[in-house]
Length: 352
Image (cartoon, rainbow, N blue to C red; front, side, top):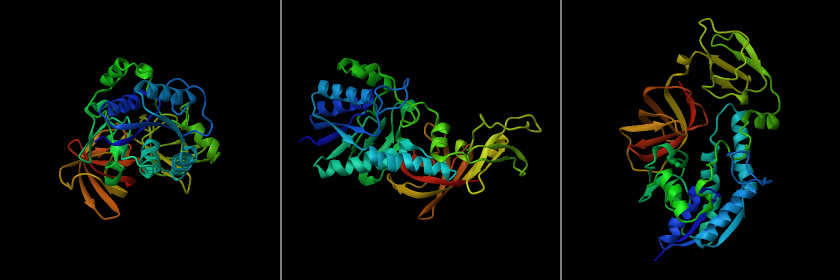
């Protein structure tokens, strides 16, 4: 007997093919488009963003082709509170958040899943590129499109009600299948950057909400090298756009090493000073196999993977890297893997 499945349909090719596959497998599928913007625009700006009126129409057309019921759920208020305001607050606190990860955690697999279960659905399906086998989250076969990192915050309970139909396919295969199925989104560009910052100008978006907050840019020894209009405009590892008044003594470029929100100070230094080998991470979520040896860790979406040793301190983790990592930013997720299987995750608090 088939499942009752709620298919989240963004208006893109991935979620359309995911919904089509589940319907074809004999499940009772209902499509839902999440309206996340309080003032949706008619069209995208280039290929960025999502949640426009165009996207909702594309999702509806795909549902019609597949032959499933379709609804639009207004999640704008919840999205504003749990994702957008969280994003701004994290930057104001000197951290670098990942809003896609927060949206998966708070919207798609909390608010939407809760409502779906209350309505009698068995599971929520999305077009994420990841595999889910017996409740265990694994990387997609398409390494370049793998999204297991941004799903690594989900709990075992949430994963038990999730379906990711695309994890065994490459993106090229998904687009070809969409064309075969007659889905108009087959050639639609992927959304990029942050969906609620349509023009891609994160600094301008934050400046509008946090205002000017001038402060010093200093070298590692405390020497003032310049000023900034807001520490929120910087992230650890950043090299461009520092607007420093004087060159480094050795003539080499400087990078952002740390952001201190209380004193509003941005510290810069050489690339070598970005290297860290110890990470403190908080709010751990163990959602995979009970493996604690031979792990690797990924520290940002599409970032490198490092061998590591993990000390579980209960409410926080100490992660010792086998080789130094650069540009590790507080607020990002540390997702732990055993091979290609997600074991758990935690939020990076500090690194040294």
